[in-house]
Image 1 (cartoon, rainbow, N blue to C red):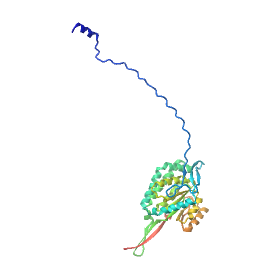
Image 2 (image 1 turned 180 degrees about the vertical axis):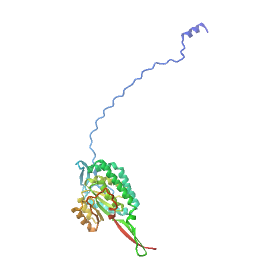
Image 3 (image 1 turned 45 degrees about the vertical axis):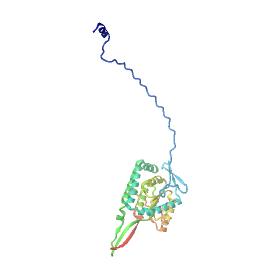
Length: 328
């Protein structure tokens, strides 16, 4: 190598690595503070106006009247339709139109529909419990207990639907070459006066046994009981129950009961919500006698949480006996 190239090589040092740029400090930008939300404007709660339940629909009272439903403390809860004499007639007409088809349905199908009502009530358990607590002035735990008892009662009667024939019917021994069979059949249209307390369990305890055997009903839910009663109507409207099988009137029993007791197209009457031994109870029995209605009398101190048995099913069933020759 020449002397010139050796001098140049000494002047240029060999590092063996590429030079690196000096790192720069990261710049951290703090986020802008979130704007303070404006306070929400006060709003009025939407109060519900409960209607009647007739023929599978929810009409207002024919008279246009309504009444205020209040809690025991006096707090406003809702408005409810106050049914009139014409509303009662419309309900009886709807029940009569629906009764034949409901009676022809198989017992198994009726049981399925009653069980479906129980299912849908279970889904609305919170709503029913809150309503019961409000109208009865009890705590929510007591409301839930009553809802559970009512749901269980619907399931209980659903299970009885296809067993009434075996328990209440019979094959009768006769002297002669005949088959003699007795079987229960529905009475027809039944008017029910539901108790004021317990609101939901009392209503269920008079309603379920009347329809499980094939009857159609017109039920009067008194005063504050209108709130859970019409909510139950909303359940029935979407539970495969034919329209008109159950018709719910709200208002004063003393105003509506006389028209139902004297209506010639009503076949039976349950006075569960009338005070036992009262003048009204006696007058209703007298009116019901005009067309020989079957009447279930009110019982003082009745325990609605007790085992119901078939005591409220039997009065609304009639026994039909058929003779048939053997071998023909």
